[in-house]
Length: 401
Image 1 (cartoon, rainbow, N blue to C red):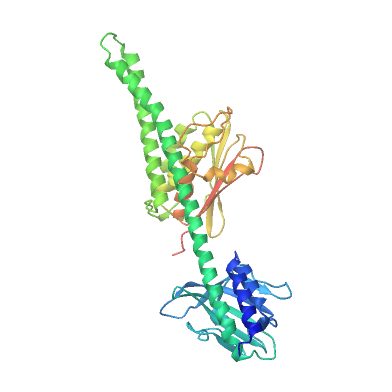
Image 2 (tube, rainbow, N blue to C red):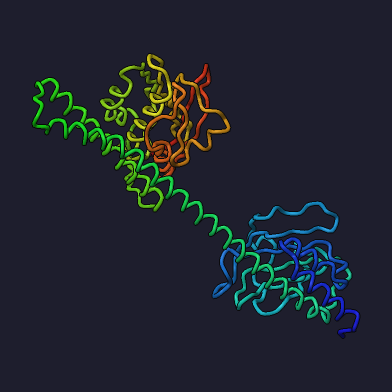
């Protein structure tokens, strides 16, 4: 029977739930209700997918509360309902009192569906120690739970909206950086191409063959630079949209290095390139062309940031299920605070001369996208001996036939 005291209390708890700003706060306000004063613990969970046709099989903790303040599960902890004997017990349209369950021991487990806007998106579990919970009071608690469900649903909507706004702002900033980078990087080679081409076309000056060849070589070099920038931008766009073309196959690191050798030798003409590749290294699952692109990009990065005549090393190690490749140099290294940023688009560190290196700042970002698209991971560190930088990545070993 709903007494005046209970009605007033429900009104106060209802107002408190409506003012809560987090699921945990809303749960604590609900548990202040006198009819739940014996509750020992309670958990708010969300299903992997809204409950529409089939009953949910798993849930994740959104907020957990224990009266003694210990043992609470971390938000995000996922569990299978069957592991706690909950499968088939929860109903979409009404609360349930369960007893004799592993999760309830000798007391009562109250199961409430969390429903908002005709969507059952989660559940509330409340454990009440003996004696058994009075079934006639369940409807009073259910009314407050329904309000809590609506409040939490709105909190999640607002959180998703705020996250979407932040992502949209980040995307806008990335676009602005992209436009600024393209504008800056295109201007230099285009200016050179235009300048040398117009000089060659001038009718008031006659250039000797050697000078003409020098001009043409400069135009060709700057055109290659433009092509490289265009390729980087296309790869970056493919990574951003999930359309990067990668064709993994069985290949060996030695084969990839042989394919990339001409580019590597040109890049390291003023450095010493050392390769430490074990003879019995297992084959990997990778796209040979893309893997070569990663290694060339990493070596190019080392050349850009390390002094001439220093050593650049490509080493490989068999880590059982993966092959790890390390590209290290003897440059100034990357400060720990900047290592995470180094894999972000458009990041530019200072080179060995103390100035920002040229380029779009997409090389390491593209390496990261290619490696991850092939089931590997990439990270930055410091060589085991001496100064410098080390960039490592892994690729999965081929299954044994």
